[in-house]
Amino acid sequence: MEPIFLTPYFRPKIWGGRKLKTIFNYDIPEGQIGEAWVISGYKDDASTVETGDLKSKSLRTVYHEHPELFGNPKSKEFPLLVKFLDANDNLSVQVHPDDEYARKVENDSGKTESWYVLQADPGSYLIYGHNAKSRAELADMINKGEWDKLLRKVPVKKGDFFYVPAGTIHALTKGIVVIETQQSSDVTYRLYDYDRVDQKTGQKRELHTQKSIDVTTVPHVDPKLNVQVKKEQDAVIKTLVCPPVSPHFYLWQITLDGKWETGLNDKPYLLVTVIEGSGKLEVNSKIYDLNIGTNLIIPNQMKNFTFTGKMKMVISAPGNDD
Image 1 (cartoon, helix red, strand yellow):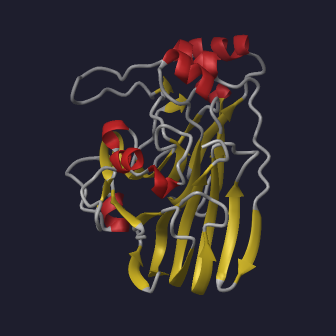
Image 2 (cartoon, rainbow, N blue to C red):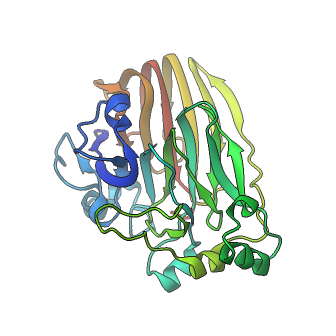
């Protein structure tokens, strides 16, 4: 009957920086740290429970050993992954497969994801989608290296939200920090990497050109999001995406200034990350401190609880099939 607080798993990246320390006060390793996997049950990259009876266990282990905490789910693996990304340089242009292709080719799940923008330098943009009208045209433009002609650039600012279904060509670029909510998968096909050389190997990073062509949705179509905003007590609740648009997860951004009494509301469990400010969580007469960068899961047994404080949170729940 306790919330499950989690310690992130950190990943160095060629494009990473140090903002995960300066923004969230995380004790990150030395070097270029691009990702903090803050709520992860993915293989060996799982986050770790930091308090309570389950302390020091990985989320993956807890999910397998205590399915009751997650409403006895159908999914054999923890279905979602939440992470912070610090793009200190451009990420590679990439695309992810859907579940069918990933299971057949990679023995893994597909990867649909989303970005909520936490910081963006002036003039920042994303790579989001492409301009090819057919798969043959897509392949031709890729093989000719016509990247400026192929790739769509979309201006971006703090507070923007992007839903990135599997099959969407995409990339963060320099100066952007996001919180990403996605399917629990790490299957990535790298399409273009600016001809960078990995300093450790002295080689250009591997590209996955044919697989990228195979899985890209052609032509690109922007998903039709129905973002809804409502006031509930002292909380403003913005529904960013949910089924059926997003079959794999529900996602909300909460702005709280005061008190919000709420509950699971028919969801099996909730994933909560504080992205600004601080506050408290009260459940069963116990009070827990919440600060920027705090990550937790509200398990199935905690039907009702109260948030207080002045903070912003990103909250997600698994889709109806998980």
